[in-house]
Length: 368
Image 1 (cartoon, one colour):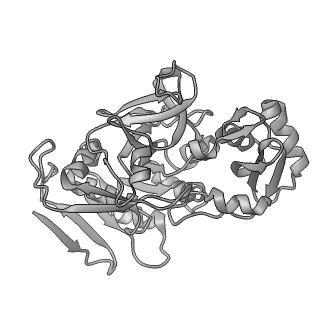
Image 2 (image 1 turned 120 degrees about the vertical axis):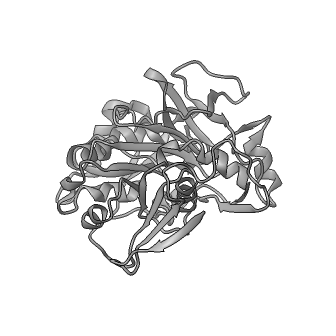
């Protein structure tokens, strides 16, 4: 039995519980009545927004990959209007956990987490970089933090583990299928790994012909799992592009490195091709993110009639520094050679969607 209980000590605080026991309200693997359809929108960061229909059984299958939600008290900072907020709150309910809803307006996050016994804080990568600056954030050392939605730089991961909690989890997911892999406390490295595929998820790295690539080689990601969508609403061209031969192609590039962990190398739409040389945006971003004065990076290809595309990058600097773009280009060139960005611009902020993902099409306009 599902019930919503309003707390007596906070007008805008809600507990959303399933049943009174920690066991799932609906047994995983049980029969689910498929009598309704849930619709989620894709992010639209690299193209048009699509609508993805899911049956209840598909969402339940995704939720079964999140057994950790059983007994957890989950707080998400993003609005429930966002796909991930809807999805993970449903997962929490399915597994018998408790959803904790934040109050309206500004509030003291540290105090709120402690007061309402939040065990897991789920945040976007945009919020992750701000978390370490909060007052008394060290009091959250026992908290589990999950983040994802876009790349989480190693410097941000390290700062969270040093200043907030070692219990950091970075996930790779897609609207069409939910979580794909998860990097846990011992998995974070300078390559920006996002973990090994979750139980029940089959992941392959393939070339343009759909042939599987050896360990370490970069290529396109494709996955198979229970609960993956099979179509976009009223979009046959995108459906045929992403859903092929029983596989879902999320449009991401990656490779598998030591220990079987997945490393993301960017979007297929974002691949930079300079005079026939393939350049992965993530290569540039990871190098520039290691510069001590750089806070955030976005790399992309500037169209060129002569060269095809020219690699460029936008950066956000840390407060109070004065590094020049010439110095940044030299820093990148020392590691990347021909793959280094030819232009770098410094911005105060990046254009982002409501979930914090960088809108590279909008960013590209700033170079033209």
